[in-house]
Image (tube, one colour):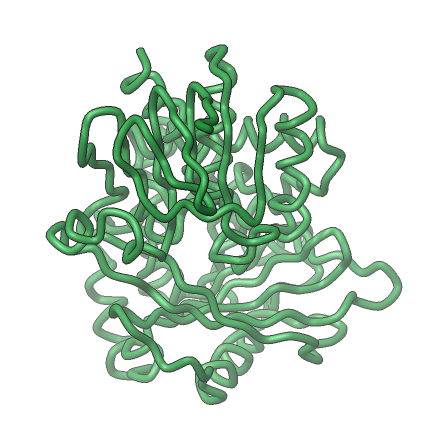
Length: 377
């Protein structure tokens, strides 16, 4: 017996679910296959930050803002936490402030959502930001925080109820010969197949991935328990290290000076690609991180010194009621150096979508609309 669907999607992480939504909105009958009983990969092992501020002006920022709106729409439909709190990048050194001022000067001709703040203005926005030694900050109003566990475990129910998407968990796709798939030993047929398999690019079309130069990134993160007395962080907070991480700041003339100082003063952070951020979910927990280690195979054990550095650096710019750590973990995502995503057509009727390089929460919904429009017309 052969089962059939119009659109088959492999993977129920954020990239797979985003493509399911985009295809269903075009009127297609969609079936999603996920090998686990629920999403447990990179899509739930992150800050839950929808982060347009990290994307450079142009198509990527537009994609991020479109994704932001879809997140707010889905949260409204599904009743899950989505907090449009914005973000603060705090500057305690002249080179950090120079990058921020250059960034704002470039962006204010394109958007009114970013501003330079004085220490006093920062204090009015954030109960956590340390104002001692603070020179200024970048305020952005576009960032939204979700709890990725809640969001990724609720979204399938929203998509099934509102768009009649069939999401099948515990169903492993082991082979594809378009238009057919083998799913837990059963034969399926689809008009088009989207493979959104995240860091598992060894199972389906491994030769395509191998020739692409794709790799992986392992990150370490932590979470506190709920803060007492319903204390709220407000905007997500970032230290100066974050200015060196996101492509949005890459063209700032002072960035090179900042990098040179960090290499001299914080070589451990540079070696482990650490930048330090903090957000708060709907439960009141603070989410902290993160580091980046690149390669195809990683030590399964996390490094205590990396987590300790993150905690120590965080306390240079933030004070919170409790930093007692309740949970630590690591995530692994796919990355294609020099590219913002990897899209390939290994055979007629099949599209691979992968390697959003840790920006899946920020870009997946917008990217999916573009891919579905291009592939399905």
